[in-house]
Length: 598
Ligand SMILES: C=C(C[SeH])C(=O)N1CCC[C@H]1C(=O)O
Ligand SMILES: [Zn+2]
Image: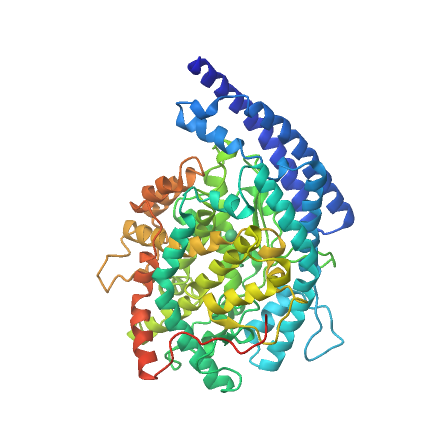
């Protein structure tokens, strides 16, 4: 009867856990070897391992489905069976799975290998997106150089992946159907374990939209003042190549010439890192020390032996985009990133180490629960730490910022700098998966991929392409996560919930009191607070063993995601921007673009 069935199910889960650990370890090793050194041989091995493991997982799945787990009383046992019942892409027949793997490998390697010629030296044609193109967008103030670089990158990295992307969509939708979903969109959304996730995401966007419109209007004004009316219009969308980032996803690159109080001391962490001889290793060790100051885990020895923290100079092709890896054996955890000494990479190092910290905290969970409470949680951990690190108070503790006034103007400048990272990013992240939901659902088809992408870029983000676009182009694949089949709503969610987490951690650390202007949320640094660290660790140890509202409630007392954290953090900036945009009579929002892209 049921009790015996559940006892048998429990025993089965124990053996399946071991098998799954080995299977995932094999796949992760094959992927690591391929993405660290893109060769035909390494791709062949990765594909063979994925196909072999898929056949193994099909066998396990058949056994799993012989249990009546839907009637189980033991909620935890039922949750494990429910998760194992979703086979993922391994549900595909071998030939379709091979086509899917090939399509994604084609897009990934196109992206990783794409190079363009230098604007100033057309004979120099070995510029990759990391570090060369990233550096150009962080430094150049020449609209022609930026336009050229933008067009060349999208031509080299995006357009060639159109066919592979179309194949990937077809295969991914087939896999979704075999897992009981209508399309891959519902499969991705199922990770958020709510029937109304899309409505929740839209509600969050409505909460933050007014704040975004204010910072958008302010930045457009200052870009117009710098580049002139015929480059930046008074009421239209902002041209994407002028925002300091090749994807216009964060706008920190324009902070230095648009900030509210220009005569206040500059907070240039990059210069300080360089002048203090920071190396990639020192950035990693510094980040690790913040985690251990919270009584969280340090990195294991194998992490330092096996991670790749700088681009090897042996001429190999590799996936440079930063990533953190769990090898599912409870011991092997690695980061792969092509670090350069910049403030952005200092943040990224904390971001990636946040993933490793989550892996370490839940490493004793059953393998099936070694994931974030929802994908947004995993992206939020490192960023929450970085919110403390990037305060002037903490940067002074580290000697990366000399002492300066803590007056209102400095605080507005600091909030503005953070806003160009955190507020500005929200519409970009949101639209990237609104686009892919439409593609998976078929409301966007290959003959209007690029048109629909830019319609969303204009309507949601208020950004337009620097040059006419057509369906000869395929701009979405010029973004890593589209080429690499990485879901992106996780970042949108992370940039909302990380402020809910930050608020709770700051209260626990005694660094923040609601309504007390001497303890602003934006000036909170939880460094060395073991109280905060222990609370964070407890939530992370859950992995995905409980629905994410349980995890959220454990740390914040709330069971829902809401933008109150973001809005509270940026309130002084919001007030300032509204007053400033009123003072200058800036048009809020944007009229339709006049650029031809559909
Ligand atoms: C650093 C990572 C690896 Se998970 C990343 O892809 N991020 C971090 C922030 C947003 C997103 C991006 O770069 O697009
Ligand atoms: Zn991440």
